Image (cartoon, rainbow, N blue to C red; front, side, top):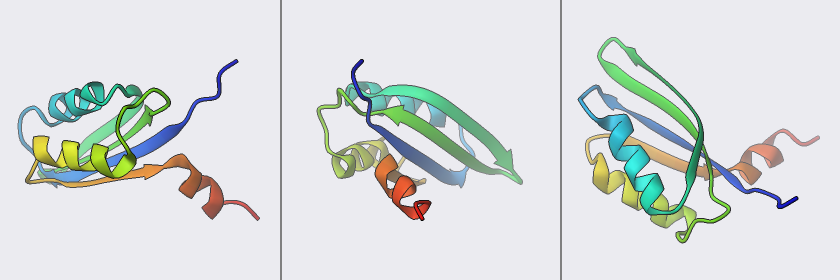
Length: 91
């Protein structure tokens, strides 16, 4: 079985039409697969956390973040490799 590599994408900013579609498009263009997504609108602020499979991606994490930022320039975007989370919670 092939081991997968994942990343966490967070997007926060003023709510507007098409945020999820634009972020998903940027992920697809980088050959990443969206595994899970949660989003909510809190007092007109859009908040989303997305887990993506980057195993087959043709972009580095920083390149993917820049691609997403270009699609939603008014939003705060962060892309973080799962290894950072795993390291933070290792005792």
